[in-house]
Image 1 (cartoon, rainbow, N blue to C red):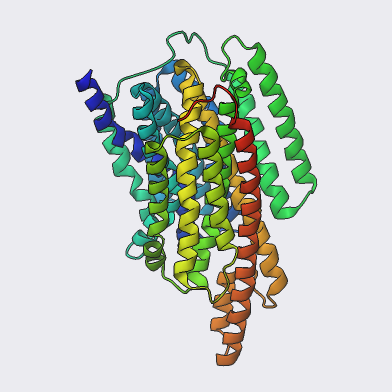
Image 2 (cartoon, one colour):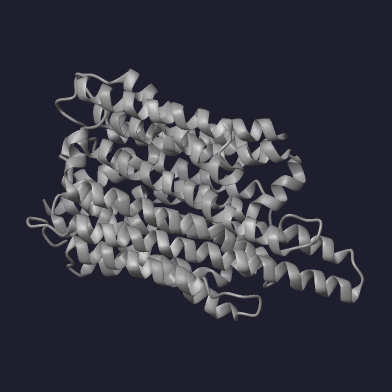
Length: 487
């Protein structure tokens, strides 16, 4: 038993690497986007798809891939995903036009959807003791949640010396390492009673989730137009059909009775909220560092290192300190809201350490919540359904990230447009516009642009604080019940 346990801990880092890369590849475009757009020259519509298609495809397939892992083997799915992820990374790196880039990013999303639920569900099987599982899930949380923070940091370091393709090139040796080590370090696990796979349910879930994500993003970016209505109707009908199908299917993808468990439902809602926070403010924060504060991608990456440390410390605290779910998750979300509130006070002249401190407070809370919530999700689900449960949790995180980027980004953009009189509709464009003006005019244009951007940034942060505080209150009520034991 001791030898088996030691081997499990040795294998754990090889489960954390794919979780880190899957999350990083969402946010790494925050700093790589200027170089990519300059090289491939996409249209506005193409650029939106270049940014969004990875998350769309990944979110739509997470539950399906989690069910496939339960049915056919989680290690087998992990190895298959490693091949897909590596191949897609090479295809993106070699893309010579926006269409090829979009297609390769879609393939990357398929690979990511196989990697993320596989890693978390394998951890559920490897670490059966509660304390060991909590420590392992804490490490996974640092990798997956921290990856959203680490993406711009790693991207900034690479772009200082290499071309934009380097941010995807780093995925390939890691996938090769997984293919060389996982077969020997990680045992296979699956549902021993699995006898079939709900293919129609998988198709319906893909349509329902992708349509719902698209509807939300379109609503906050363009308002309630016909495209939003059509996508929302398709998404709502798809969700209804999926729920109906899961109740009647002989071999359903997910056990809907899990949602009657308060710990499970409250935890999924909590990880969705922290994903909203981390992704929603991430793009805005790195734009702030590189425009208002004039940092290079590398300098922005170095300044942001404490934000990754915040995630690590939060996960470590949640792994070691025994807390009730209501106190731990509700308190962690309150810390996230406090970080948002601090960022809501940012102005053009706010010292950089204040910005980083507020962002680090936010990531500290996400580390606490992610660890406790994912531990609860895995503990609530039966071991044979760990893959599907992990898929549900991570789908919530992807939906939260998509909503956060769209909603908070739209709030910031609306305020910037109202407060800036120049020709540009972004703060980066305003900086370029100011460079073409004479001295005093350039200074005045930059001053107005930076004031408008920080006003938008601050309001977006306060909106985020309000949303997360509401989720904190809901979590405290949902998770405070007799029989919910301490973590």
